[in-house]
Length: 288
Picture (cartoon, rainbow, N blue to C red):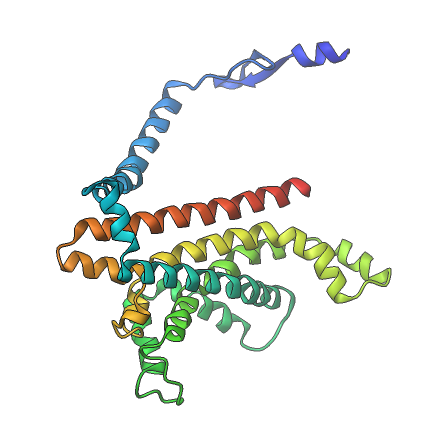
């Protein structure tokens, strides 16, 4: 069969009753009635839950015009909270990318007493209400810390709280990839004289990097919008005020436009960072 014939050859598509029908290669596959209904329901559901609320926040942020929007996000309180939130979220993501990968590697490749307990503990931040997580942090690192480390009212306390609530994301995205990896290539590289660091850098890391990027993106999104776990340990002080706390305080004071402007900036920054990590993930996947 020639190349042209292969290109235009009809493909068999199985229909009801097992009977096939021919579809020309390259032709447009049309959705059936059930598929169209499902697609419409999915779009409607996503619009009601995500798109419309986000659009409402953006519209509310420009209630006083674009000049009012700019004044809202460049005010002393808003700009300070935004800088602290973005910087702390990036720091938390960097630490999680390294430590989460390390924890996942240990859990998959090593066997040790208490491994099942560690697996259980990692998922605790997922199940724990964020305000309870804040209470835990405040009990351990508050003014009456039982271990003598006081982080109450300090930016380091906010960062530690964010690390706590974002711990599982990288671990749980990297673990399945490590579990599905074949060990043959690693063993072959080791037999040829490659050291553990070389094997990890040249074989393991390129394989798990897309998963690390995905987990880091999830952790960043969680850290950007976190409220409950940081409100107690931060002590409601200006130097430890994240954007979510600032927005809540503005709502309490009746400044809805200022709160919406801050939320819009958080949304834009989160989309840009997550989009960048997604591009990195796709680029690594294309390179194989």
